[in-house]
Picture 1: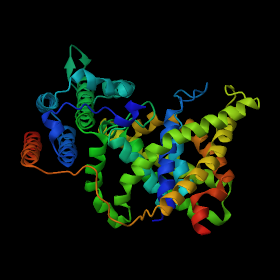
Picture 2: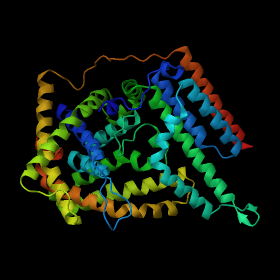
Picture 3: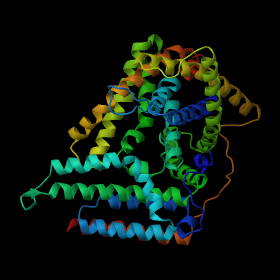
Picture 4: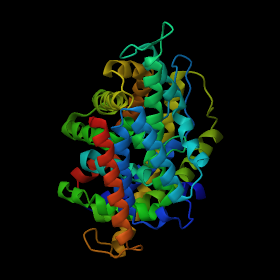
Length: 183
Length: 260
């Protein structure tokens, strides 16, 4: 692992923390406020690639688990994991890995739409599905019921995937994937 | 900012404070499992007693911990109502089926207990200690090419980067406001555009910063694969052994009661 990768991983973990400090966006037609922190996970995957995206995300998980209030709303600590929403968070490294893996696979001909599809798969479907599964186990609910309780978040997550994809197209040249591929 | 660095750690030299961070990490995971596999009200009562005992050992007031429940209150209410409306079996009290509400209440209490016991970890252990304990515990991950020894440096770097990014973000925002950008639009497309316009220059600026930082680290001879010494050494003492044993016995008790 090169020093550059190490610094970039730390940098993007810090970006996730900073995104958590943003106030949630409220939109008239979506019932729940959108926290833009999970955008950070999509960024980690699509900017850093599978390996570094995973490590960078793992770094955030470690920071949360050691009790630093880095999740949106100043939350942190092992209690996040044992709470009903723990699934939406503990899956982050896997989600970043999946996004990174797909982006690296499609790298040669990547464009906005491919970024968008990849981020919807890894950053919306995977996270929400696993989060709902986790919620259903913790709260003894049927998987269907917790999936339905998820629906309110889907439009916001979709918007986040669009934002990340727009950003990634514009910053493709300086992304760590490009820097590693071209030495 | 202080609160951000130190989390919720309370330095009061209590019994739990003095334990090895690894002991606490493992014990609290085991207790959480015991709480998770609780099914009867009797077991739930036992869990409450254990929780009170642990808070006594940590010398932390329970009221302080209860504030961590607030953010998930909404979800707890949802869970309660769900179980109330869709009861899994029938128990009628003057023609009203209350079994669902009782089940829901039991599950909510169980979740609250699990959160409270996990919160103990951050109350009794400083972040540096925990970071170290955790990096020792996840060292098997190195077989999956996770650079475990470097993680502690990366944790520090991450915390250093946060104020740098915030500064950079402020500069970009000021520049855009001075050019007449309105930061409170109502339309969705405008909102998306604003975020994109803010984050793209941010990424350019901070990756620049990161490149300089990694050059500086290299120039000062930082090698990513060398062994370094630690600031805090962890020690596993007799006390840790007894505490772990007590916790494991408790898990066994809960499991045996549950199987009857």
